[in-house]
Image (tube, rainbow, N blue to C red; front, top):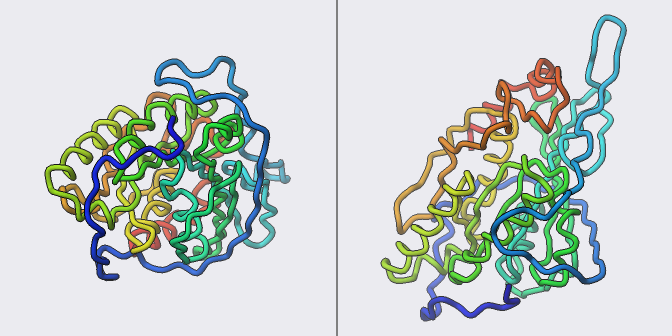
Length: 320
């Protein structure tokens, strides 16, 4: 996998898009940042069979017996540590981000968590980790976001990003077809460590891509749709600099994680930022009764409405 693959096209510098083009609703950030780095190692393999004997995901839910019945006292959905619920319900959702170098993974994470965008490129050394907590009625939902550097020497840290993740964002640069082709390798490697995470195929830098000739946009969009179908993944085109579909990515992650109906309109036409997430089959064994079979211990489904205040959460999702 090349570190800095050449652009597929060489369009002239595009004019800035108006801020009103498909912007996301702003969110109030609550960031906590951590940085990790590690030694170098294993190369990304080719698309095919996953690496042998991947480590099993850790237990995702802790609950205890309380007199009359079983009452959840902690919710731990994905990585990031269990959260004491106290008077407020708390849920942690781990989201992994993988893809080639210089495609905008860190920029998207920082934009979502802090609401800021920096045009200067800073290479991720190892793994970058941030959290954002949102409050919906009496529930605190923390997104624990793990961003893996796209260079070959950091691939040995892939388990840190993928293990126990609820969703994995497979990301590529819309202006560089080679980064889309690399998704096959990233998908194979990530699935070797986590076979149940909800997959998303996310194209970045839509603000540049929209200025490409229409035939080039059609070619990339067609290939991205093909990959998304093969991966059984939602497909989302985004722009960090213009806040296009950044917030929506995580709203859809939330809706799929808890099998909630989401009324964010889909976008399916070339020339617009694709947003395709409905009617995506997650795969055999991924869900049972609308609850992630491998994410929750048996019997937890009866407590899911209590923990999330499902109706109120759904209202928040529909408002976006």
